[in-house]
Image 1 (cartoon, rainbow, N blue to C red):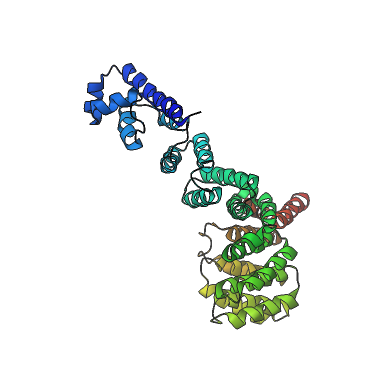
Image 2 (image 1 turned 120 degrees about the vertical axis):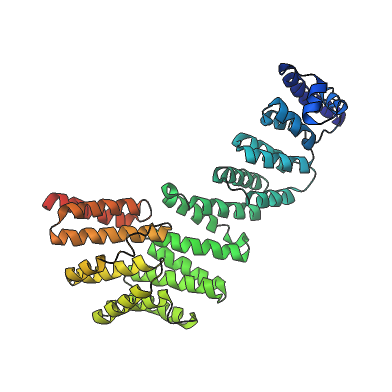
Length: 404
């Protein structure tokens, strides 16, 4: 099909749309020109397909005055292959309209453009997609680009797109466990990612595995993260911290101690919250109960929003182990942590743990109704983030129903 024939079909289509809507509105070209401040000649040429390339900035006032669905104009542009800058503008408009089908159609036309190499087009569209706020539209674009990159054998682009899809899936509570398997698939392409994105992947996977109680896997990812961080301060601290807590959860206290020693060697201060908390936990596990309680109480007075729930949970655990119920009652009088609304995965997990411990406390006191409410609240907090904790909570709840 010749370019001239394509142009004719293209502009007749747009011209017909405008003419039809103008006539439905019982407006003359003169009246429309007055309303839009666009000359009669320009409007006439568009309607008669005499203007070869009407600009979007020219069409938009006409579309607005005639109440033409903008999607119709965009569809008309896509009948032939417009310039890349036009497609970019159309994509921005479609994103603003929130029209998923149109977004996909424009993006695909953009990627198929012969005006640039596919590699360059994928890179540009990827950069534009990163600025999109609507997650549904963003995911649709990433999915489209991933399929296109796979079909064209562009594995580096595919690796980056899979990483972004994993990071997005990780934010959805309902998909939290399935997102983990998506992350494991990304690991097959990890070597194709830039160094910083490799670090981001392993950092997320180590915490993701920890939150799903896959502690052995979390340890593996933390160790791999340590190999690639090259002693970068923040990433290395993060890796040793995750390594510590995963080892601690497995009751591998020797490895937890080694992770703590490494953490303390590179931490700039021994007064950091994580340092104090890890030290207190180790003291407790080696049998220094009094020292652990003293250090945890100090942690509590200095704790930030990020760590206060963890500290409270550890104190309640120790008090339950030694049947110090009066100390728990005293601790619960502190209102500072009751008002915290959990936001991150770790905070939701800590919140679930807190209410599970609270249920044990009330159950020990014989206050079964409050114990039941605490266990139910724990299940809500855990959601899909902590299957092991959720199951333990259910077991305690069933036991409560059977024996109260």
